[in-house]
Amino acid sequence: MIAIPGNVRVIETAKMNDVDPQAWLADVLARLADHPVNRVADLLPWNWKATRQSKAAAA
Image 1 (cartoon, helix red, strand yellow):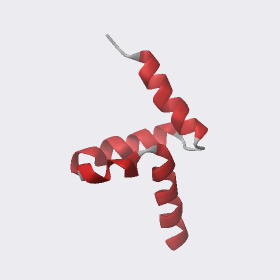
Image 2 (cartoon, helix red, strand yellow):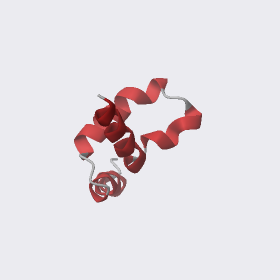
Image 3 (cartoon, one colour):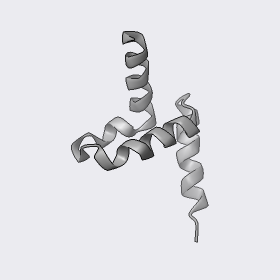
Image 4 (cartoon, helix red, strand yellow):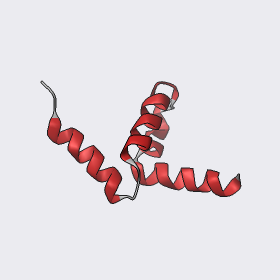
């Protein structure tokens, strides 16, 4: 059985934080296996967006 309400909440949370849900989820899933457990908060949409913006500004 698929947990549709949970999936919708994840997508809506990304949208509420002005984050492209597809880009965010693809990046998080790609990084999840190698990401340190003590830095899991970095993967939340609002933190992910801030990290992306600071990397874009530095480039």
